[in-house]
Image (cartoon, rainbow, N blue to C red; front, side, top):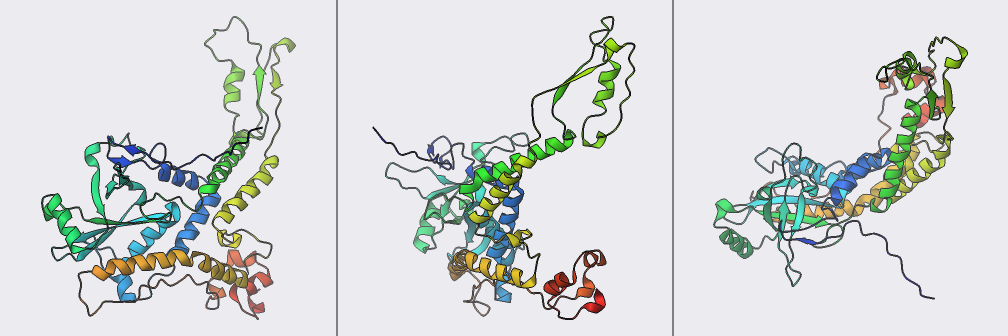
Length: 406
């Protein structure tokens, strides 16, 4: 007997595309685009991603001057850059920052580059490549608006602040006016490797959640009734192209908005009474409950995310202590990502052109903090207070005596 090892399909396989001068990112060069589309169609996936990105960005940089520092001609600041790369880090497992230099080899501008718009340049026979290619529509999702053109691809070098390297790159393109700067490309998979997002292993679960949602939608839109056919004994004298009165009436009684309405049908004899023949099918809406809960659990585990952070009832409502503990736990889970971002900013600003009175060596990102002690219950809408129990109010606000408000 021969045994063989079954290998899972590689979702983000790469190959040289010499016609475009790039290495493809996935079989159709749209792996990051597909991941984002699948995640956006999953309620749980989208919620997890939003929380993941917020915890990476935290409350911004500790140094107030640094986080307000304007870093490019668009007037964008470091806190804006932090927010954008945190979203990319969460969505794709990597991020990219463009650096512009002056003739003194100092960085004078930093800008976020959407991670999904970047591909590696083609690799040579020795396995070496030193370029990144930027295009707004590698996945060719916007062909109806603008056709994909090779001429629109912009090539940049990887980040390397060595003055000699920068000068060589400038000379290679014919001077500073033709120089496109450098791109700091971070990948959680390693140097010059396309990354996978943390949720890659549950992409099928996310897609399943979307499918279950579609089934429930169709059930609702069709009045929770099994499919079938109406047999209308139409008079042969009627034109074949002429709709019967019954057909016209039934078209107006389809869908959830017409459920439980009455339809009046007048027939001339018993032989003309229409007949309904149901197809053999069942309403599987309830049967999907287990699948729905299991895929939601799988997605949450991929992010190592407590359910309470996604506003899921964990059996103890939304007590302040539970939320505080969940924040502390998830801050510890996302700490490595924040350390990566801090390190990258520290490296980039080592070569920043502005001198030096306002320079900082503190690139620390403040983690998110769940604060509840300062909340004023009087500011909570009365509609919410009316449906909360006394214990829920106490747990939320952290007050021991609120009887006068209950």
